[in-house]
Amino acid sequence: MEQNFKKISKSSRNSMMIVLLFGSFVALLAETFLNNAIPTIMNSLNVSQTTAQWLTTAYLLVVGLMIPISAWIFESFQLKSNYLTMMSIFLIGSLICLTAPNFECLLLGRLIEAVAAGSLMPFTQNVILLLFPKEQRGMAMGITGLVIGFGPAIGPTISGLILKYFSWRMLFLTLSIASLLVMVAAISVVKNITIPKSRATDFVSFVESIIGFGLTLYTLSEVGNTGKVTPILLVLFGLGIVILALFVHRQLNLVQPLLDVRVFKNWQFDLCSLLSTCSNIAMVAVELLLPLYLQTIRAESALTSGLVLMPGAIIMMICNPIAGSLYDKLGVKKISLFGFTMLILGTLPMLFFNAQTNLLNISICYAIRMIGISFTMMNTFTAGINLVKPNLTAHANAAASTLRQIGGSFGTAIAMLIVSLTANSSTNKTVALANGFHAAFILLTCLAFVGIACSLFLPQNKRYY
Image (tube, rainbow, N blue to C red; front, side, top):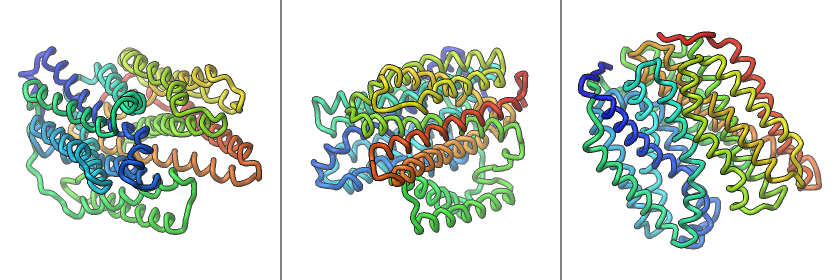
């Protein structure tokens, strides 16, 4: 994609970045915004917990489907109209949710929100990668990582405060107002700094992408939610893998692929993407496991669980820009080794957690892990993007983000499967669950050691294509 920075001053660039990131923050906030509202929605709309849970599951599923086609979206349309369209779609979805008379309309609104949300984060990353030269991308992507980590982390806390005084519909009024404010700011701040490519749309690639990634993410999500592997899920997962293989084969034979998977021919990009994916697995798996551990083994409330995790979210918010700035100065190898070392130090004590473990110790261990993740996830991602040709930046972003999304789903599925299988091995349910969580923590510790080992093969000095 051609680039034009002549009309973008430093102040305009920074203002544009702030507006783009705030829009992404709103979309990411929506991922976990309903977690505390599920019981209230169940009572209000007379649906079961399994049904109500689809408000979150379906949202994340559609977000995952949109990421692989994000490069095509970014390259095919004017930047400003592209962003305003996505925010408009998100606003329409939020308004449908706000006025939904039944669960079906509420779910429809969530799906519409997710269509925009799944495109917004890769879109924002692509713009920031264009706005900043490679030697300054660490800080910029560190701030982006702040949004990626802090948005979903703060969602349950904000929604909990709102639900204490208002109905669940106020959550969508908040999202509607926030997205409308972003749109108003974007009209004057967001600039067209790219020239769209004239390209044919390959319908078969779209269908293969949606079905293949859809089946894969759905089956992983179901395993993660239930902790069980059924024959039908195995069949659907296998079918998804076959369709993805056909998708990859087709992309390799197209002159203008929907997703240029040739970026994976660069082994250093592959290594950086793998490390970023490992970091994401480490983050989302514990964000799922630790609240369950606190509420099942220790019988703590959801509010207490949120408070235990809150310091880690705040520390991640502080560390992300610092880690990005250090990456610009030191390169990725030292930063990644430090990050995965911190991840090990924070995870090892979790192997000894029990029903009497002090909540402060649990919070400190989680916070140490978040320091490690803030140093690894976005920095290894940025290093990978810097190692590909400039004309492949959008495709590298989409490919690495897709891998990270699938990796996160796979990690949570495996973690919950381990907990479930171990929990069924004893008649004492509490003891069995505790053993299950310990087994999952062992897996995450091993993952951190894999990260350390792989980091040794990263380039010693900063490298750009």
